[in-house]
Length: 272
Ligand SMILES: Nc1ncnc2c1ncn2[C@@H]1O[C@H](COP(=O)(O)OP(=O)(O)OP(=O)(O)O)[C@@H](O)[C@H]1O
Image (cartoon, rainbow, N blue to C red; front, side, top):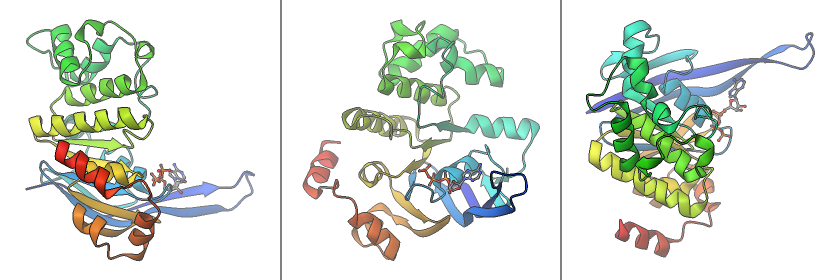
């Protein structure tokens, strides 16, 4: 079943040079992009820096309006949704950002951060906020006794787990991870990826997983979209894209990754 459909989405940014007299120029960051996200799957979007991945993610999350094209979620056109319709969308689609610290309010306790999406939606958990936050902390591998602590008292990997717990608080159907593990050390990255995969197995939601690291994408995704200069140049099942890429740019991208060691990769997948 299709959960989200991005149809012919284009995003242009109008920029102006330093001086007021400088001419305005239009830059197309995302150019006629279309893809679908199936219920329960992980679709990865990969590409070099500047290829338009984050802009696409922000449009899919309705954090940015496209210049043209449509975003359909659960059968509804939400491209210009407002009010209650937008609130429902914001509940169903959660985002985990790259830098956990800048996406967590430093003045709020973890308990307050994790339960904030419930507050926006006007929901009171039957067991109370603290018990609810503690349960989620346990689910993401954090010590529930630390629920009164502040973000600065956690490591980068732990802070990202707080961001993930917050995303899960409202039982989303889709979680958009925008370079969610890119800022973490490799060993911590692997732990957070394992957590993301476990949570999906438990709850059945979908991921759009944005990353530039192909080793990470290979581990987590079922399908992969490759972006180059604002366009999707290849989209297919992971093993097809990695094993038999059709597009020249995808081939170049794969050739440039020395970190994918097939033996290591096979061992990791066996261990999962
Ligand atoms: N608000 C904006 N105004 C002008 N240009 C923008 C804006 N946001 C993004 N861009 C440009 O659009 C292009 C695509 O950016 P985007 O962040 O989507 O790429 P990306 O693939 O996610 O790269 P990265 O991995 O570096 O974040 C870039 O050239 C960027 O400079």
